[in-house]
Length: 587
Image 1 (cartoon, rainbow, N blue to C red):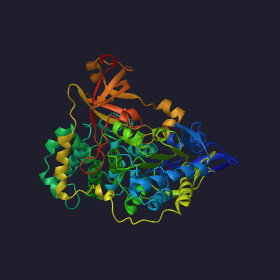
Image 2 (cartoon, helix red, strand yellow; image 1 turned 30 degrees about the horizontal axis):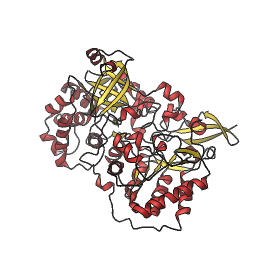
Image 3 (cartoon, rainbow, N blue to C red; image 1 turned 180 degrees about the vertical axis):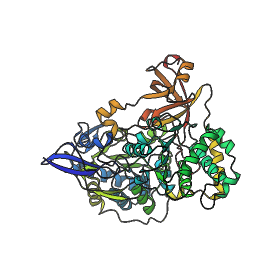
Image 4 (cartoon, one colour; image 1 turned 45 degrees about the vertical axis):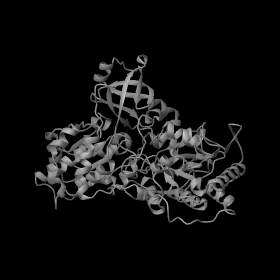
């Protein structure tokens, strides 16, 4: 037996992982040296490696659809079939009728290879499928590293970082309990696992995190504890209005601001859920402003969910890819005839009847996949993809630090790396396609999160105006992260024990809302939003206030309760939704 080391790419902390190996066979996880923020610990996601390599439901060889059935074939036959279908679309509808999508669970080299393939095909419709909260968060600014949490006297967390980035839990708790008087404030509508350990849980109204941050800045300014020039828009900010909208008292804000200002070392951490934190870009910028306008040793840590989100953002910006919200809208509008998916299942990430219908009507859908998800069910060609553990690569951490890793072994069964597959396709297409001009077309520049000084009050006011109201019938819906799942769960939901410990198919509602509706814990209920109705299992809990409901972000059906239409800024909403929850037999 020997030990092979690699990196985990299921969140942006880049934890070291190790495996026991004998020859070409990988036997299981192994203890890894004490390096990085994890301190030799791994969360549940970090233990997925072995199962990803040997999972019995993994796509093990290329598949092509004949007579409506996906059947195994050779790589040569699969790539020839795909190349022929692509050329047929180009000849009939032009290069711009082809869209390519991928996701941040890939190395930077793999993302660049996809961009090169798009160039060969002549299409500018290439995109990276960020989770809705990730793209605006990384564009909000840079992030300090995890060492900023060490020995911090005050930490303010927005979100449930113990679930979104579990290995940071030890760092946060060590900081809180290192010295008497150290404080941990957690701003979250739900009494999360992170909130359990807080000195004070600030249970705000869903979607009002930006308002809470603005109130903190206002309190620091009014007390004379802001360093340097205070932002001019604070003078015209009516914190009483913001406090009322957020459901947080002025006394709580005073305690938070005082603890943050008096701390020799402090940090504000933003770890948004997929849906529930309105205007994540504004939240990120306000968090950076809070840290930047206080004295030295105050840091801002922005934590996206995806493994290589920072690296992907650089590739997207450098190559002027389209925003995934634009590609989804264009698919629904019928602007494409072909979709090539490299690990990105848009049908599971942004589910809607309109998108499913649009994909089903394409002339060509092909996917490079580890497992058979919904996009594979719609594909005529499925290429057996290798995971990042089976290839060399590099990526960027949440703080922008780059890291590299080596493959722990050759790709399992008949799988191939994404770079190899792209090279095969390029070889097949090389004789017929030339590099096109790429000066025109929509780009991510169409989606802007820039906030000028004059816009701050307007953005804050729009949050108060657009927050969904909890009425007698409707509840405000947010998403929940899960330690064992990453993003929309397209990879992690296939792991058997993860599905058992962190299942989908449920909705959390408060004890008060359950009593009003006559709902019992464990009962099957209907959750309805606009034209969508989903049957889920009710979990009655005291973690939520009356008027708030929550669903797991890795549940495809539950994600369909949210609207995935682009907003005024061109991006998906990151805020909560409104739903009705009622007993199944009352239909």
